[in-house]
Length: 373
Image (cartoon, rainbow, N blue to C red):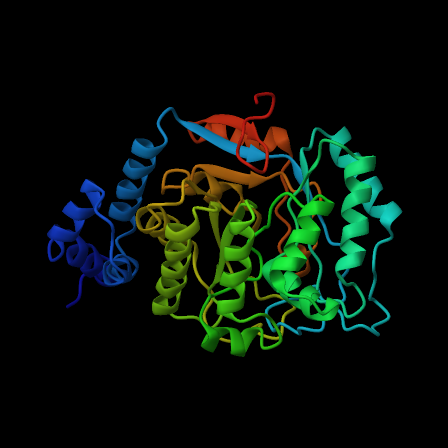
């Protein structure tokens, strides 16, 4: 008769006993292979993985500091021609629910962010067939003029790829124009899973994995740093998730331009993928946080996605290798469209960080401490 919890117990034995050499390599900080990362994710040994990742984070980032940022997502439009199956936010161009915010509305949202103690804005929308690079050049120049002091951390690689094609110029020139207009850094949105088999199924109209990587490579080459993300738990496999991590680590080896890695789980409500397949669990999320810390040995900051997981799981993630709680999200519409309604202000995030046993530090998008230069 199989003992209760046999599957998890077998995973624990598999990791601790059968792979003692792997655990020794992890503890010594030896770079993990893709095969070893796969073994860790397959092990189901949540407690051992959490302990190892926590030890690694404390060695790399001593002092018990956990950062967070006060900023705002401004979804400048919900119009998108990509038609991603995992997205509940987008509308086709001629939908009665389609919108594009005016420049005045965007500037007012940015001013309100500054009044609330925010330090940056992240403009993200869709692949709008009428918004070319000149639109964003004018918008960014206006923001820098009207709301000086706010960081513009905006536009995902798929938006850049689409904008470049729409404007008849290449990606590098597009990034140069946007940077000159005031774009400070790029968010890692649109990565989903950097495996084209997965992308063809969930986001057939979006940039390929290679195109996402090339946008980031070009941005880093211009001195523009960025974040990297992963949305997992849709139609991807564990092997796909490891391939994604591999591509992030490889590019970071080349450029050093990623400030942080931010994994989160697919939220299915109101999407065309709702009810298809098994969603990633909280355990899988925490294991991904831990393996990200152990495998991405060249990325300093791992962010806990409390927006999709809730503050309680976010607190636990801080003991699984994460060192950042992300944004207060003064405004967020994309994940909310998928039925997720977790919210938190600055006091909530600071309390959660304190309660988890850490010291909260407000940062800017470049991870510098607010009030320090």
